[in-house]
Image (tube, rainbow, N blue to C red; front, top):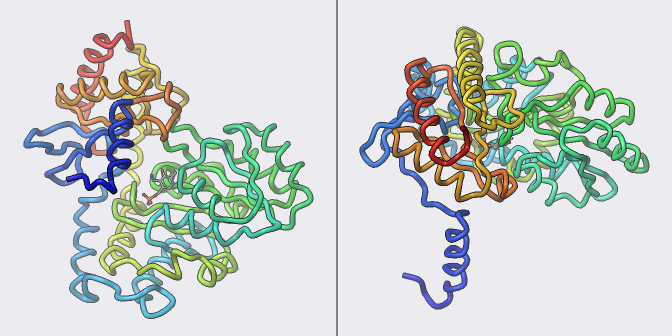
Length: 394
Ligand code: PMP
């Protein structure tokens, strides 16, 4: 029931819904797999970030159960008071080794990691230089700093160079970019970014949420993909997507780690991961090292699925990775495409404003290593029918 004091909230919600910008959440009644059950119907799932199917991998599940039996369900405190267990430190050692960095620090989520870093590394008198399409958690982190902000055109090195020239007068400079852009699936031009930042003595921070487990040797991320080890000060990763669990981390020098321990507010003021989460993340690193065939399958599926969609005439934008948007136009068309797919047994969610520009509304798909060719073919057939019906393809 809406109380009189809440009426303006209800009115705003109604307006969002009328504009196609608010939809009820879909409730999944099964594990997050290549298929999911929603309202009792089994659907092919193209909407998760579970790139490598690790969330149900027996090694991760067992590690979580074992650590829970050994350490309990929760950690009981923030890291700096009494919430640092040996398993948290073990995960950080393993992450640093995996990422070829001196040190790593985990936080509760990728979102908390970006917020934590950006809000403390930069203070008044500093400047942050940010790609215009960076993820919301980067934008929100920047909102929390008193540093000045410069935004460069998406992936545009000349625009970055201009910003760096303007930034000459500042004490501490940080260039920040997604490694893989979460809505379009394109890869940041990292070698050019690093070169220009080095020339201007600026630090670089890369958010590899969608590159972890996807790009680079054994899924080490975009820095590994471009052979830039040692030249990026802060690599952010998430443990919530390809790693199959939950959390975020910063990998870099021991100095950066210590700085974050001293100052990052989500680290200082929010309880650490349950031990089971840390243990499952360690198991995820083991699987990345032991089963590189998962990443090969992910890329095979990506090439096949994206290629077929493009051949049918769909607009998949500038995607180069398993994130394949099918751009539909205004929010109503994206919602209609998603609804038609659902009716045909495919779960692929629409993405509309404010995640993307209104006229760039889309259905975003992500294939995983675990999808079978039969599942992808069935999906493509439904896409073709829905695309023709909505006039997206001829
Ligand atoms: N950065 C990017 C680029 C992302 O896409 C996401 C997830 N939506 C995050 C950070 C946040 O990660 P997490 O879900 O672990 O909070």
